[in-house]
Length: 259
Image 1: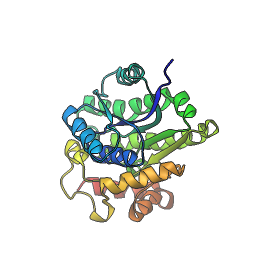
Image 2: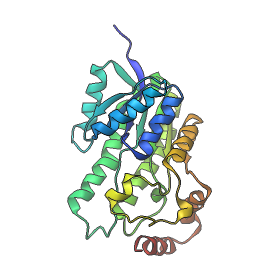
Image 3: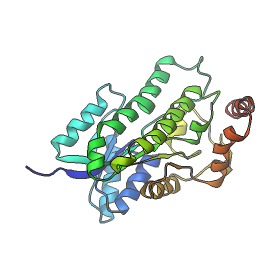
Image 4: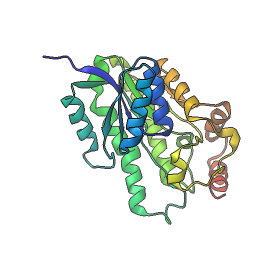
């Protein structure tokens, strides 16, 4: 029987942080499977990586909003003779606005993608990850450290990702599986447009490029770090909920999101 080939599975790989993570993993010699719903962008990224004398990533076009998305991904990998050594959960979206005013179905879909799918893919391949001494890199956000009036559901989903990843970091360590939560601040990607966030909405001092975030995320993951927060300003921001009263943090976030 043929031994399955170990790969790095990256969701939300068609642009932004996901695409840059794909480039970083590829540059370090990993075989990739890129997952997203936009086929042209996935193909372009795979071609770009292959043009750099790296193995061409396989692409898997699937809308992760589907109820059976994780099972479909697993079936596709099995049929191709592939087995995850590392899972990178990057696919997510947010929405700017008061929760009571935003479309409820879209907010529930956000929970499904940001939380349910990430959880499913994190747990579904644990045996495979342990076999290859690999791990899980979950893309959270500095938003996960604090409540976010004006983006309430998004902040809550990222708080889940952060808490879940930190717990898995301890639970899976005895199996040799590393788990890292990558918590970037603002990054100029397609995320802002989908979320309805205006240009230059966030303070420039918090912004980092997708390339830098991906590089720091990869390095931290490979070193077995539990949490990676790119940028000193974002590190300070992540500490505020521990240093200030909760009511003050809520007021600050509401002022910020309400701009």
